[in-house]
Length: 190
Image (cartoon, rainbow, N blue to C red; front, side, top):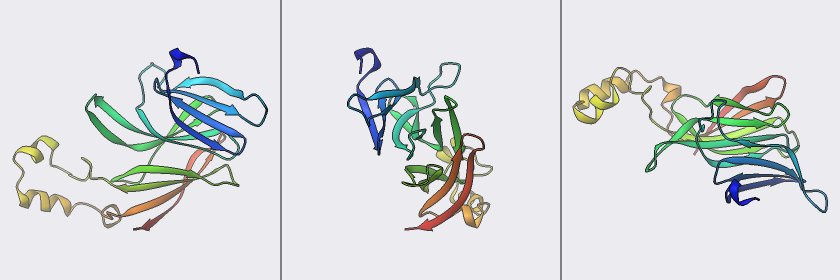
């Protein structure tokens, strides 16, 4: 890696493919089956078209055919504050673009796994995270400053039963270039 690309902070390898993320949020994918590795596609920065970073990458997972990279990230509004993103992102090397998908309500993705044989099947492990949607009519400032226990308990009554599960889940998805990200199933576990 060239010095201006930053230090390597994440690496994932599957068979003859490898993905690398640098400290400057650059993503590179390689075919490492030959004596000298060959870069696949272009070097891509983890940002939207306007040049704004999507988030700080915390985990990556490369699929079996080396064409898609699952990315989990945190939002960093200030240097000392990290907020887990409730979405995961897929970099599709064929389309040279990022796809995004929000996990189930009140959940945040913590790890991504691709099937070793089927490059379309993705599993995302999630955990419970209360967010502002859970709070219903209470705004975050009021909750922090003046909310009473009765108001908070009444608002938690607005949460649907399926959203209230506080254990971990595995959510499965099909990911294709033609159809994007399609949710398949969700399984609860502890």
